[in-house]
Length: 407
Image (cartoon, rainbow, N blue to C red; front, side, top):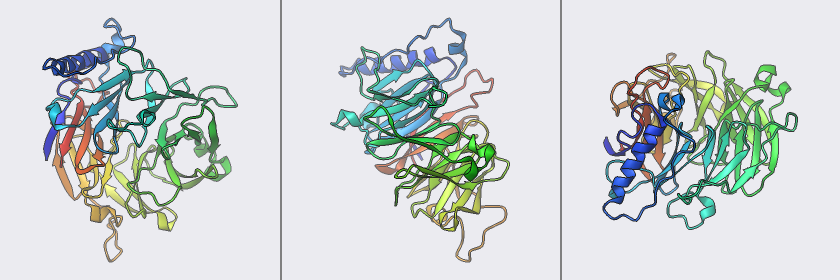
């Protein structure tokens, strides 16, 4: 394991304004040798006198690689969206080449799948975001630092019944031209990125999913290295897996996981498409579903800890298998040969106690949890990691950040 780059102490401590000023200082240091680089935009409306900006840590809540591995987009809890260049010349401390801030907290987002620092078509270097009481908006990732970021497109996300804007708790691009947004009451919308109005808005019926599940929040869309059809899946905070056919706007309840967990927050697929790996809040296991058996539960990957409200997002690498961080700064690994067969051996037997990890890598100091792991699509050995202590804790130092690692 080798650390390639990191954000240093930029996000250490508490205070949103403090983090942005340290980030600016690192950027200014890069400018001194004569690099022709622009200024970084300042946060909007931040003043040191506002107590909330002194108290809250700046934790990264989303990481997305560009398709060619040239850059990394990070969404932080200071309402900032940052893009980092990934190159050997940048040195060990990472500073964003672009950043902008939203006045409101970002609930969910999706980066265009063709985004790249070397992408000539600027219409592909975009991110769609959802904020509370706001319509969905599309922003450029490459903007003029001397001007506030302006939305390229605004989408009509208002509910026809209440006329209030639906907040999206999950967003994902379906292809290069369309994106999905998941909100409350099992509602999913499909948008053409170039048009204001949705193509369709649909939800799982009360008859199909039950009265309680009908009111559930769509929390995530499935993630896969390879897709074999147009069907997508979504998880809800009622621990239900939904099946979505974008061609017909059909949404149906596919599997309800009945355990003591409190909702699905991530769905990963094996490369062969046979197995789905379900990450849940307040759970000590990853549930394994078999798509060939109507999403029957066929196994459990046991975690040596219990997840809580702060989500720990994993990734699936063809080379390194399923990876997820824990609360002790370690990466737990299930090898590819285990993941591709659902942890089921040749005899078809499954241990009653579940499958434990096949490898552990120590990454961060004890007390820092690994919140997100994202593989580099252009280099199977490189991963981006977001780490922080418990953001709800009382630790004043609250050392958080991002690092790039070669496994």
